[in-house]
Image 1 (cartoon, rainbow, N blue to C red):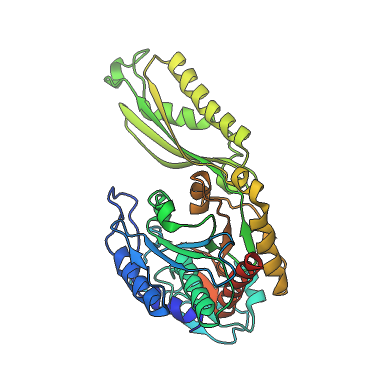
Image 2: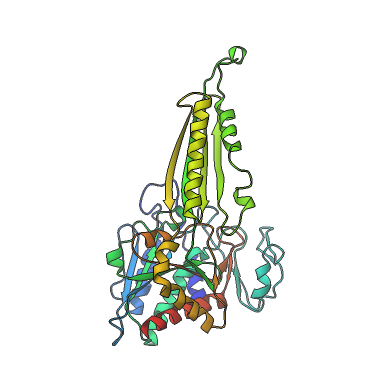
Length: 405
């Protein structure tokens, strides 16, 4: 079975996570896919396949004779889809021998166009898989799951030499908690890769340092007729706080290694207001400087109005995994060599976001991220090609072969 055929089955299962839920997993429906994957793994001969009570799927393939001393390699993907857009009742559209032109997405009125997505021209001649415009596709990250499952089947059926292979599928990556519940001793890998990225030649081992920042503003409300020198309008103070941040350092004005402050929500009255930001930077030093800027704003506003007018809460979310991957350059070198062996040039670039691999790397499992062959995740324009998925399977096989030799 080809990877894209598995994908078409997996996307039918509704697995959207819930960022407001405090349970683990955040949605019980993720077990539907988890249990199917355990069944499929056992059918492949992965006898220890199992799903834990918190919806983490584990399984392993023992090393082949002569490779017992090779490092145990892990491959991970996540089962949930993003709550940003509808992930239920997904109806994939398949176009064989795609001509590189604009594609109308079902009856939705949406059009997947090379004017917006220039890379579509490079996909000419492939089998293109899109949404019908009313849902996301779910290739993030069910494509990664499908590719790992197909890779595992190839390893077993073709009796290819390999060290111990550890397979893991996690819930809730899209809401930021996917890596926390992975039982690393039970998983069993010394090194790992997440298969959760973009184009099939992509390698990522640099991500943002990230934090959430919330300003709570307490105003002083009084009848406007008597307000002179007394009223503190919390909503106006909130606007003042935002104006103290550099307008050029917003997501819409930044790229590659440039960090940002991103206002995600704002609400307020005269008496109370709140601003919520996410803060991002690849550089640890610049990231720490951004947090210090926010603390300085809190101090300045309280000195201007009165102590307690503003309260800043900072919550660190994840750090740049580069410092944990650098000592394990073989992970990147072997991935590059595998990609080049297939006639592609590796695209090593920073991710402007986070990844489970970052958290896992800081938990002691060095874990860069590989592409899935997919594009435009988290929305109705999400798409992937069957051939791109095939290439990812070959990349994974190539990596394992290099560690086995």
